[in-house]
Image 1 (cartoon, rainbow, N blue to C red):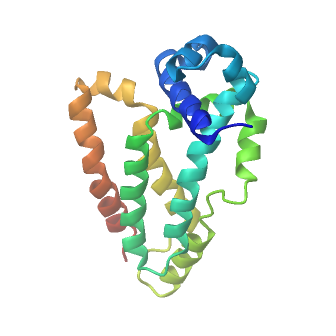
Image 2 (tube, helix red, strand yellow):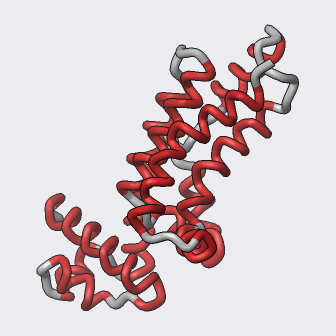
Length: 200
């Protein structure tokens, strides 16, 4: 029988190696060594590298999506919802910085798996937020901007700095610690700028 602790140790080891070497450069033996198990044991849990890569993504997705959906479906003020989303999402990505690039890799090389993720019952569901935006527009509290455009801005402004972090560090000529500080600042900056841009 498979042991949950061993499986989690393998996923943690895979994250470490995938971050260092990328999907193409990672080797199953390296992952086994990092997890302190033999290669045969690794293959018992995960038949190949692609299956392991997908398991890492699914594990992270199953942690993130419910957190997002709790915020989307909550009864709080829409502006406070934006603040909670940006802060929560950025905190999660700071804890899992590998995730955006992993997803982009799969979008390019394995779109069927991405479709599989998005068919998961706990996939991100911004419909309650979109409905709330529609109500706020009718009430005259926010500008008449297509709600899906607002949601797209919300996701784009929070995600892209993680996708392009290497490029931005070079362009902005800053070190890791300074970029990390900028990302922390964005938890508030993004929310307030977006709120200001849509407020009537």
